[in-house]
Amino acid sequence: MGGNTGYFEFNNVDWNQMWSATWETIWMTVVSIVVVAILGYFIGLLLFETSGSQNFLVKVINWLVALFVNVFRSIPFIILIVLLLPFTKQVVGTIIGPVAALPSLIVSAAPFYGRMVELAFHEIDRGVLEAADAMGASQWQIITKVLLPESLPALISGITVTAISLIGYTAMAGAIGAGGLGNLAYQEGFESSNNTVTLVSTVIIVLIVFAFQFIGDFATRKVDKRVV
Amino acid sequence: MIEFKDVSKTFTTDKGNVTAIKDVNMKIEDGEIFGIVGYSGAGKTTLIRMLNGLETPTTGEVDVNGTKISDLERGGLRKKRHKIGMIFQHFNLLWSRTVRKNIEFPLEIAKISKAERQKKAEELIKLVGLEGKEDAYPSELSGGQKQRVGVARALANDPEILLSDEATSALDPQTTDEVLDLLMDINKRLGITIVLITHEMHVIRKICDHVAVLDGGKIIETGEVLEVFKHPKQPITKRFVYSEVAPSPEDTNVVVEQLLKEYPNGRIIQLTFHGNQANLPIVSEIIHQFPKLRISIIEGNIHQTAEGAIGSLFLQLIGDQEDIDGALDYLKTMRVETEVIEHGR
Image (cartoon, each protein chain N blue to C red):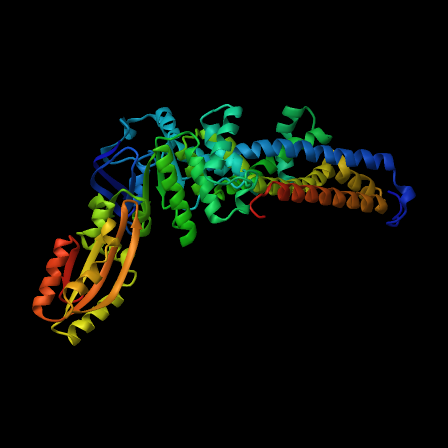
């Protein structure tokens, strides 16, 4: 271990390493967001479509999905990574590197987003769904033409929140070997006592979070036509 | 033609069974505007929703132009629904779509080609008078404009019937009249049957041909609008009718009671005019024929219905018994409906 260095000794920073770590973080976040958005959408849809039914079988499905969602939402992320190690090894073939972080990132965030999707669907005006029904829309048409477009602002702001917590998770995954800025801050910053690397990593993560928030807010406003 | 045959509907709730509709038998002819009026909880919504299968009767059958709605399987019901337009109290427009896209929505559902959708939307925008608002979102429209979009949307698939679920209840009086005029215009122009439910007698009076009064899930009175306005039979119908033709029946009653007490020899009569009678100089004719008779006007009003004007006039007659009887006879020869009021209603 080297001696304790200050926070502003930028010549101690290996910028190539920094950029590749940044790229890894963005890659992990974006790939997992895409998968989480798709999976979460289906989980939310399943929860929404099976809620309030009188049918016993449908009730059981609803109960099972809800249980799955609640369990995986409750497991702390750091434990989930460890818990999923065998699964990760099976699916990805390794437990090191950005790709190995994906399974645990997705499994932790998809149920979380699924709940948000369900809530977003429940917020849609019942009257609009009834109108579509009265026009003779099929279930598929209601999903694609009403549920999705009418809940879009909530879906986008939901995925923004999920993305930001995913960025936090990538850093945590990085600390135990998944690469990215979390990994760099831990390996270089902490283990080698290079405080400047820690600071720069932090600043970059904060900037990434800001960027996602900005894009999310902008897109939400753009699609929301409910207010003039 | 629309037919309800022995229709009943019972809902099972946690607190037991609730009968929403009881033994309803009713026929609605092609091309007419049929109004169902009742207080909230009377079962109007359940009844109208049976026409497009959003509710199914527990017993009995609902027949729309020869199709038994409750017998249709899912696909058939969806197809039938394309041909049954519906407008709603809260419009139920998609906020994420522009006016044009909202109108195209039912056409998309019916899988009509894009070119045809655009053409149809264009026509309907003109029909409901929304030119210039094609690309506006619902949040940019007034309540009346939103309901115009609702009407255009309901007409998109050239429906056989149009259902109106309290379509004017969320609108102010002036906008209500605009939308009612639009409905009447559409009924005349397209010959489409309109079934509407409302709690406002004003709506019935203004555009309906026939009316059914619903109370406690039963139809307690039905008939031509003018007839029901002239001779309401059931107490609830009377309450509806009076609330519309005499805006403040209580006030009239108070005055009538007072006059009866003050002038025990006088008579108070209520005249009901309809159609051209409303234009005749009946009162001045009475004054001519019975110069000794003192006449004072207590209250009068006139209303326009789809089938003509209907008016009522409260008069106090003071004078000889002979003159009063003569005046009453004259009214009889003029075929003006006359009711002598002994004491308030």
